[in-house]
Image (cartoon, rainbow, N blue to C red; front, side, top):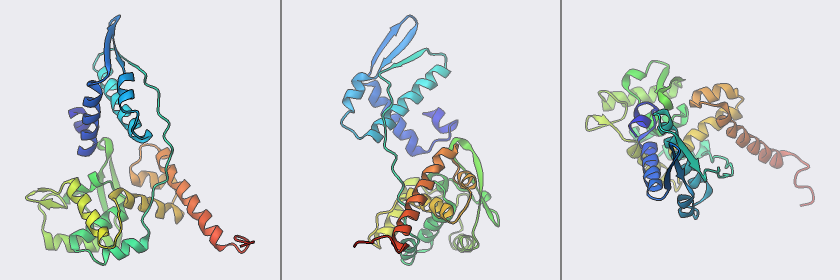
Amino acid sequence: MEFLESFKGYSDLTVQSYDESIKEALACIEILEEEKQIILNLMPYRIKIAHLNAKTISKKLSAIRSFAEYLRDNDFTIVLKADDSVKVAKTLPKPVSHKHILEALAHADLEEHLVVVMLYTLGVRISELSNIKLTDISASWIRVLGKGNKQRDIPLLDSTKKLLDEYLTNSNPKKFLFERNRGKLSENSLRYIVTKVFKRVALKVTPHQLRHSYATALLNSGAPIVDVSELLGHSSMATTQIYTKLGSALKQQNYNKAHPLCGVGE
């Protein structure tokens, strides 16, 4: 877990998820030693978690594979059995409409307003937002520390910078952008702020949905996918391509509404 946090740069929530999955698995899997090889038979564990949905099972197995890889890197000879991949249907992310975001912001205080705007106009992960320091902020850019301790620079909109300056003047944080009791505001606290803001307008919205909204808005306005991928901090452009599918779906909906021949026969 220390390796995942310190060297891989995983968020507290991800590390906790890995920790729980690996401990749960180790209580069930069959561990054998044959010809100087340690064999981890995952079948008993797979039977235990078979009732869960495919996405959850896939995440749990991914944690175990990551643990086995870590052991191999530390000179253990590990063999996984019953390690077949689980097919997970690719679901399109659900962005929040610009209209609904504006409605929610109309009822937000200054800190709440800035949290939502930062997520929506920078496309950062909630863990990245929690870790933003005052020294990361310049006149027109914010430096973000992403997964794997990779840094990227994201441009600041003028309107976001103006809101940011107002917040800094009123709150006067010392080290981190969002602070409580002289320490950074936790991911869970920031997540709660987002939930509270949208609950006021009867919407259930997560920080990750605002990241989806950011990516979708850029792609639908013609931004090159390579630039969007870099801004999101994706290690592979394949991860970003799901948003192009979402954009295509929206285009199809707009086409169906707009074309005069659509709906003929109704």
